[in-house]
Image 1 (cartoon, one colour):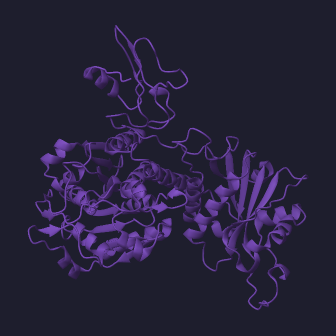
Image 2 (cartoon, rainbow, N blue to C red; image 1 turned 135 degrees about the horizontal axis):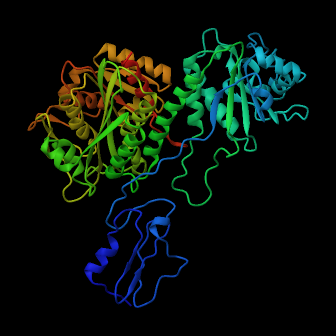
Image 3 (cartoon, helix red, strand yellow; image 1 turned 90 degrees about the vertical axis):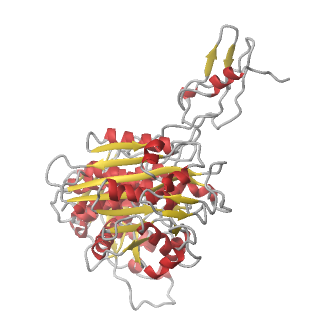
Length: 604
């Protein structure tokens, strides 16, 4: 039997005031209740005094997480909280008070003349390279560390591998520590520890502590080669990033997180009396940016749309305590600026576009540089009418550029660099399909007056970026601009999933990006800005097309973007399509560290 309701009554039920509003309505004649399951489902309506069963009725305000309603998009995105675990500088008593002691050891020298036919288990393990507190600890424990190395020799024979953790640590009854673990550091380096090795150790440290849930305090002892602020900063960043866990959308069993009992992890460096508190804090601040980047990329599209991303920007500004300001341009303001390329892409979505502009200014001192950071903000990419035939379920990561920009902004708000003014710009929208959506052959006009023939609606990111770049260049007047985007599969084919591509004609800008890439571990490679490929972008009816030939697609994408920045202005396009996502763990947080560190150095 069908039950009919007046149209006005139905609309009032289906249009709550917010995503988390209670679904209830009372009239003089009847009571209407709705049942909402943890996943989006059909609304169940009851009338005539009857109500939905109490076991299935749920107030939206009590939901474990927000989702969409029938005709109103979600307007906010939750953030994962920062880890409560503190990494601190150790003292002489740190190892005495700890439940868990991790000792970093370099592998014994590689046996150059070892008999290849000799079994691995029969090779003699050379002496461990211990110094300072680690040596004292081994002597006090009667050679325990050596025994652990022998028992778990694969990590330590013939060079070992950085981050190789012995899984069979030893519980010692006579000591205060409940467990001792060796942390493999790889072969002893001739040069200082490189940033990548430091990050491997930080990640391994987080993993080791994560697996010991009964401890309250841990102590880490590392050799003197780690006695450097930049190395400790990288270790701290990787350690805090390694504690990240995304449980926002789970209602059942959560992914295991670090036990609430764990309070502190103390860090001691052999033969060093240095205070690395500032380096540890800088690493934590960068990790906060990485976590924000992961939160945005991991969020599903029914949670994260242009409206909720704009509100995330507002929250970021509020929590910066005045370090960052936020301005949002809506549809009408974008139209007034002639942003036809951006708005053309946004036409297919029912959620209105939001151009997000965050500004960081130091509270005092001279401004030496004014820089612009632009991120591609496609919250979901169906491909439009050139619809994607594969991997569409992953297309929430098409906002990876915007996520890196937000992450960098959050990190900068904590780092508080001097001498630099930074503008973060994201043209947020989704590439969807409806009767108003752009179709192949349409001609759009960007805000700098250039006309663009749309040959493929799945090359939409560069259209949104075109107007964002013009805004950053002309209206904001930034002196140099870097742009990040998950722009092309061609870049993924060229550089794989670990390295981003950098396109710029400015050698100084290229060098500065290469330096921060090496320091932060966000790997990059400079690619050619081959001007002769610009012929591929010629249109028969417009100034330019949005797509070149099949070959060299990553280059022609960079050349397209170059058309929307002043010719002599330092500009770099960074394609992060490959490293933004890991098929096993999801969002990687790529780009946030590199951009934040680049901004910090601009003020020096």
